[in-house]
Each structure stands twice: as structure tokens, then as C-alpha cells.
Length: 197
Ligand SMILES: CC(C)(COP(=O)(O)OP(=O)(O)OC[C@H]1O[C@@H](n2cnc3c(N)ncnc32)[C@H](O)[C@@H]1OP(=O)(O)O)[C@@H](O)C(=O)NCCC(=O)NCCS
Image (cartoon, rainbow, N blue to C red; front, side, top):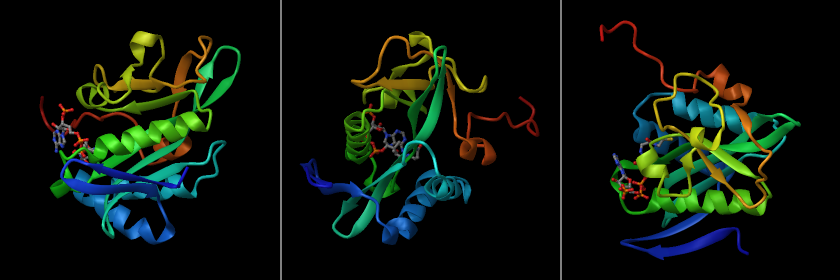
């Protein structure tokens, strides 16, 4: 299989391929504009690229012509199962440039990320996100399958998992983020205690 997928669906002609070093600046721009949250998400992506985990990260871009319009990252985390630790992946972040949203690009990035994780033999991909969005794209409520979240700060339904072909029934336990997510405080939502509720 080629390292890139030709995707000709909907109104945009889209290619999904592995990120290259010369994409880094454009990926930073995608997340800066998509999240509108300053350095937080670009810094997360850079730290995840630099980490040396058990499973190599997977970083995919969606391009239209020469332009990088979307990006998704899968990075190594762990499931603390009873018999042993299991190497799993976290899907974070996913971003699409605002003017390219709602054209199926995020969906294609998620589908390709799950297919690549599956072909690497990874059993589980976890994320925190909208159940409305990810529930239609291969993910389901992880708590309902017996997994424990890494924090009590996840909103209801946000802790989700995709079970891939090498998943086995004994693989259940607590999902543990890599240090990078904790170091950059990117796990769960924090209450704004400066504002009265
Ligand atoms: C979430 C996101 C990646 C979706 O990408 P996309 O290419 O627009 O998504 P798709 O076209 O594949 O899917 C369209 C769906 O997303 C929803 N959607 C897309 N952009 C949206 C937005 N800005 N606000 C709310 N919903 C949005 C659409 O309503 C549609 O819903 P459906 O599942 O009921 O059909 C994109 O909106 C984004 O970058 N958002 C900002 C960053 C973010 O929140 N990332 C996810 C958390 S890591």
C-alpha cells in the first residue's frame, strides 16, 4: 500500500499521508487556528514528536494541493490491565482548518488513523472527545466497556475507545496517559475556579 491515500470524496480533493518534517510549521498553524488556544496544542504535538515511547507515534496530515488542512496524531499510552501493562494509543489532537471543516476531512483522518493502528497490531485506541462526533467514527463509551478513565475530570461520555482486531477480552483496566499529557496538563477539563458557577 502507498504511504498516502488518494481521497476523492465530497467537494475537496484530499490526500492523507504521513507527516514530514517540512509539515511541522503548517501543522502548528492548523492547531493554532483550529483550537484557538495559543501554544497549548502545538506544544503538545511537539512534545509527543520528541518523546521516545514503546510505540512510535503516528502523525498524519490531510492536504489539499500543497496545503496542509488537517492533522491527527496517535501516540503511545498504556492500559493498566490485571495480568500486565498493554501498549495502546491515544488519538490526540485532531484538528482541521476552520474553513475546511464539515467536509469530511476529520472523518477521513480518524478512519486512516484507526486503520494504521489496526495494521500495526495495536489493540485499543483511546481518546477524550465528543461522543456525538467520535461515536459515529469507530469509537464507543469506554466506561460502558469496563475501562477506567485516567482522571475524574472527564465529562460524561467523553472517555471513548476503539477496539481493534487484536483486542482481547482480558485487556481491561485503567487507561494511563504518557507523561507528556500530564506534563502539559492536557488530560481532562479543569474547572475555572476564578469564575463563580
Ligand atoms: C472536530 C473537527 C476535527 C472535525 O473535523 P471536520 O473535518 O470538520 O469533521 P467532518 O467533516 O469529518 O465531520 C463533520 C461533523 O463534525 C461536526 N463539526 C465539524 N466542525 C464543527 C465545529 N466547528 N463545531 C461543531 N461541530 C463541528 C459537524 O457538525 C459534523 O457532525 P456529524 O457527525 O453530525 O455529521 C474540527 O471541527 C476541528 O478541528 N475542531 C477544532 C479542534 C477540535 O475540537 N478537535 C477535536 C478534539 S481533539
